[in-house]
Image (cartoon, rainbow, N blue to C red; front, side, top):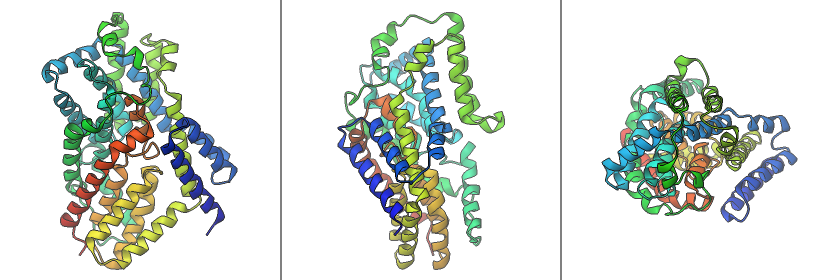
Amino acid sequence: MNPQLILCLVICIITVAFYIYGKFPMAVVAMGSVAAFLVTGCIDGPTVLGYFGNNNGIMIMSMFVVAAGFNKTQFVKNVANGLNRFAKGSLTKILMGYVLVAILLSQFIQSPVVVFGILAPLLAQTVEGIGVKPSKVMFSLGVACIATCSAFPLGSGATVAAELNGYLAAGGYTDFVVQLTDPMKARLPLVIVCALYCIFLAPRLAPDEPVVAIQQNENRGAQAALNRKQLPKFQEIAAFIIFFGTTIALIFQKYVGLDTWIICLVAGVLMVVTGVLSQDEAVAAMPTWMYLLFVGSLAMGGALTNTGAGQLIGDAVASAANSLNNPFLIYLMFFIIPFLMTQVMQNRGVMLIFIPLAAQACKSMGANPVGVVICIQAACLTAFMTPMATAAVPYYMAAGGYDIKSVFKQSVIPAILFCAVSVIWSTLAFPLY
């Protein structure tokens, strides 16, 4: 086995162990792992510099600024108060509204980070208005945004079938075709279970108080929000236009012709230029620790890919699948292993490894690959247990005041539940033979 591959795996294991240990700041652990990957040659300098300028990272920081500006408007307070009156103090009713809106937006905006960034400030104000801390609800919102992304053939979801067919064609397995509605057929039970869990059960396991400080928590407590002085009319209107203009531009991004990170960056700059936020307020809105954590997750995923560790695991899975005769076990393997790998690698990278391998394994078995490749995609898009899984995880950690341990505790039950639902349903709805 390649010595560098072994070093990469050892560094990854140590990094995850330190995250779980929790005695050192997560940003320090993340940057320590980046340094280790650099020194051992698992990744090179220019690649790491590219991670610091990653477009998703810029998008996340920009959305924090946009959300901070929008959070100062009376619209936020009015929506929060309106939902409070409707909910009559019921946290369940509040979550029902936000989770359903999150699922809807996640079909049009192919980024859980963006959807969460749009809804998080509204949800924070709403629950604080009834005396509940954001730590009680941000996990629910984050998981709803992550696990239901592009599940229906609407907006970005309409391209999923074409993407999966591209993987099958690349592998020379064109006997089967993924139909436009197949991804929805495969993932609909998961979406329903996810919504029910996030609304009714997740809040019961969420901490009543933030485990770590919430970004700007002292400036946006319930009473501070309700008593905040109204912005001048121009700034109030500007913040409203910038926020909803950004939302519309993101929904119709492919028609706008700009990348999502550019849209978010421009919106963040406009919040300062128009005077909605001061320079100091904009800087304070961006959690540096979360950004460093995000860079660390990119470095870990890059190291696993560069050293061939990800491919090694994928090849082993494909070989094992060929030796199994039980369709349920095959589906289970192709869900669990990509799901676990996506906790330490970006989901797109895991999909690129496993979907072609699954197609080849199915081809050699003479099996229908449609359900398997959709199951892999669902597994990769349902990763929410660690900050390395997707950029939305460190985002909801910052908004909810969670550390690694609290995220893991909240994630275990939904992870098992989502896996069971996906595997059982896929086995029934998409027979291999």
